[in-house]
Structure formats: structure tokens, C-alpha cells
Image 1 (cartoon, helix red, strand yellow):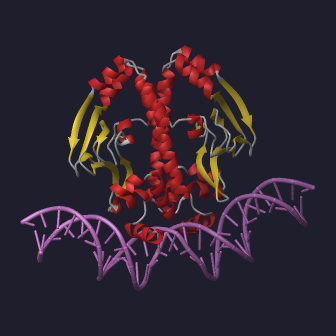
Image 2: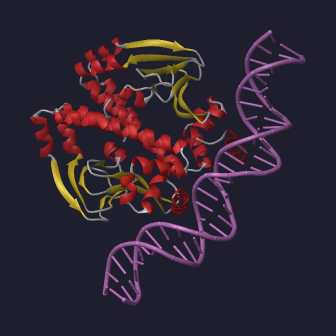
Image 3: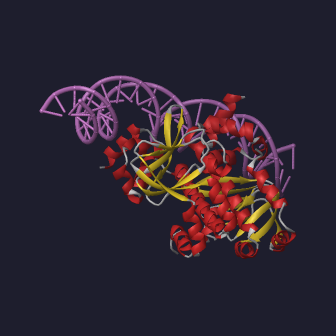
Length: 189
Length: 189
DNA sequence: ATTATTATTTGACCTAAGTCAAATGTATTC
DNA sequence: GAATACATTTGACTTAGGTCAAATAATAAT
């Protein structure tokens, strides 16, 4: 079977003109500069950012240490899930790692649109399902892989990530120290 | 605000009679004995089990070690998410830890019902949102907590779990060794 | 009650990965 | 093109938690 992401894209392609128009009507193009925060801790995540270009990340700070929970590239959807869904303050920040261009949709506008265009509820469901599966697999990684295995996984499955991001961020995404990551790289090559 | 689970239960209470009837029509009550497998590895998770009584768990085996990924008590919904959603073979097992009584719904029956009763799509979305938030929090725990902290968290937030389950299962759920868990308990009390 | 089985604890030792500190390399900026 | 700031590497040392093995408890079965 094709990947679930392809299935979602097919579903979007097959949407009727009215539904697509409704989505476009509530979307807004915005740009951010490298270093800008799209979401701050304690703020309610009231918008979803569809990344059109550039790279961003979601992270939180624990014991003065930054922990990166998600990396966003072109086509990804950036927002703090729990904060967005429950409309409660976010534990996480979202930061532009390069200049980024995004398409923004407000939480309430999307909620309203789902009422009028039920296919958007199905789309929302598919997207959340996709995120759940991603989360399950990430949890699986943390349960089963050593630091070296996690790094090799990225090297083979997401090489673009290593090419485009500083090691500090990769380390914080893999939940290992910068020094350990550096040693793993030395050992491997 | 009330918890999201309460909001979901409210939504269910507010459903029209036809939708509820449709759900009931595709539900089946079944019982399993302690030790029975509700789902085996490599099998497609084609049913969801709503636990009416008893305890179950979901786990997988990695390097000959069992890793428990979820514990199910009364009212919980048991199935392997990725396998169920994509209808692909499951990495995980689901096992009855006590005798259990469940209400079973087949994947395809539920898919059909969602077509005819759109409110079920909204309900499905809410349930998956709830699962995503749960997953995010579990990931957060693995990112930030030491073995001792994870155990204390369970002691304070889910004491029923410690009272009703052998330490082997608690350890495998916290992803720590049985010996470490035993030492933590000795140290604390 | 007495075995047999399963669950839990304790001891001795090991190892992956963390921390702290300094060195080197690479970009940026004035 | 120095100088300042970041990024990465390397070294020395520590530590949380793992492994293996044996000792107790505690349950279940005959």
C-alpha cells in the first residue's frame, strides 16, 4: 500500500471546490525570520502553521536543557498538539530555524469550517491518525534504540536532517548529549 | 475545564438514539480468560475492544524482552493503533491480565457506521486526539524522568496500577529492569 | 502441609551515556 | 583579516541503570 501521507494527499486532491475554497479563505500566508518564535511557552497554540518553505522545530525546556520534540520541513504542519486541541497553555515553543514561509489557519476558523464542511472532519481525523502513528513510532524508538541506533536511523532514513541542522539540535531531538553524538559520529566514520 | 475524557463522555451522552443504536448493533460482548491473547503479533488489529471489566495490556517483544506499551482498565479502548488504522500486521500483542469482559466492534463495521452517522467521525476524532495527547505525555515522561521519577509518578497518579499488577509488568511498562524497580521501592519505603 | 512455581529482593559487577572542562574548527562581523 | 562568536571534538571522570546469579518470599497445586 502507498504511505498514509499519500492517502491523505489523495483525499485532499479529491475534495470538492467548495471545501477547498473554504480552507483557502481561512488561510493566511506569513513569513518569519530565522530565530523567530511562532509559539511561546504558556501561550495557547491557537493557529496551525503549514510550512511552505524553511525549517522549524518544536521544543521545551527542562532543567535548563532544550529538548526538541519535532522538526518541521516543507509540507509539515506545526503546532503544539495538546495546547491546540484543548486550547490550554503550551509547554512547548515553536521556533523558526531558518527563514520560513507558512500558511496559517486559526483554530476557531477551522472548527467552524469543520461544521459546515464535514469532509474537513474526516481530513482532521486522518491528520491526527498520522500524528499518532508518528508518535507511536517515536516512542518505539526511545523504548528500543541506543544512542548509536537512533543516530544511524536518522542518517539512513532522514539524511536531509543531518545536512541541514546543527548537531546541538539533532542531539536534543534524539535526547542524547551533544558530546555523545559527536563521539558516535567519530566512531562511525 | 473538565478533563477531555469527560468531554468525550458528554459527547457520547448527547448522541441521538439512531447513532447510539447503530453503535450497539455492531457491538458484541465477549469474555476472555486470564492469559488469553486478544491480538497476536503479525495479525491485523481488526477489532477494537472496549474493556467492560478486568485488566489487559498491549506489549511487544524486542531482543527477547517484553515491553509493555499500554495498560487497559475498565472503560479503556484496546487495539493496536497503527495496525488498526492502516490495517497492516501488528507489532504488538494484546493480552488479558485477568479475566476480561469486552465489547467488540469490527474495524469495517465502524468505518461503515461513520459513513452513515457522521457524528461517529467526530467521536472517532475526539478519541484519537485523546490518544495522541496520552502518547505525547508518555513521550514527555521518557524524555524527562529518571526511573525513580517514573515510578513515583505511577505511585501518586495511578496507585491502582501498583496494587493490581506484578512488578514485572510495571517495570516493562516503565521501561526499566525488574531489579532496578525493586531497588527503587526498597529505597523509597 | 509439602512441593513446585512464580514473584521479589539483594549482591557484585559492568557499561552506555552523562558531565565538566578545555581544545580546535568554522563562520560572522567590524 | 583580526576578532568575536558559534559549532564540534576530545579527554578525564562520574553515574544511573543494566546484567547475571543467587537468595528469599509468596502463591498455587498436589
